[in-house]
Image 1 (tube, helix red, strand yellow):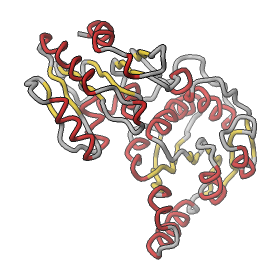
Image 2 (image 1 turned 180 degrees about the vertical axis):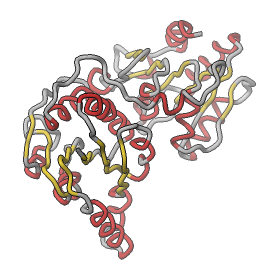
Image 3 (image 1 turned 60 degrees about the vertical axis):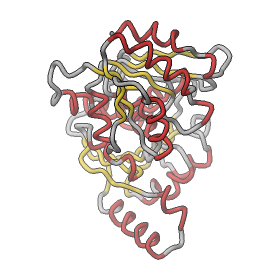
Image 4 (image 1 turned 90 degrees about the vertical axis):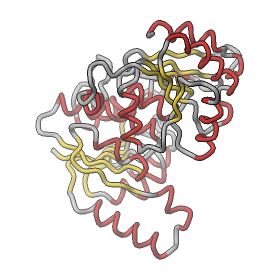
Length: 320
């Protein structure tokens, strides 16, 4: 049985789809998956044992110059690649009009997705042959697991979902490797940021432990922040520019992680590393850390500024 998964972005949403693949692979014989995903996240599906082909798509990049010649050529090549295979089942786990209209409807096979009462953008359900109801008040991972189970006709397991990618990285690590911490300080929205003063205070509190702290970054402004956070601290290392796979390898080797609400926090959860995620305005009930040793510190006033370094350290020291 060959299944096409349409889940293009964001990083957290792509990671949240992995446990559903594990369920299906464990419940069904001889099932393999192809996966349409945004080019920036194309490495993620390849880490899962049940994924055979990753089909990158570049809607985010294409929409900047939708009618340019190169963009039209790339879209044509993508559709040709997409239509090469007749799928037993197509599951649109994205649930958006753009994914349903631009991708799912063009693929060959029976198309499954959420019904109009379960989906974020109800019009998207028009493009599905078979529609499934999934309660909205569940964690995003559980919703995708139920969608896959309904689409492929098996009973969804009641145990915690398994991302099944930690083994991809942990098997290569030495047993004594986990002697550093990672602080994930970068996120896209200002209200999700913890103050630099608070980060430096936590760095100062951790210093007597003798553990090194590693600071990853993606964009130039994140690199500048990392440099400011590390200034005058010998136990802090600003990492070089890394690919997503390289970042995952570093996270897999960490003793523990402290993070703001960001895609890399979900990657930490998928890699089974102890993780303390800080939440201000965001409600973690539906999209928070899911997995082993995932902890949330939630500001009662919905403000990141009210979370203190001492408060974070009291939780972090359990792992030290």
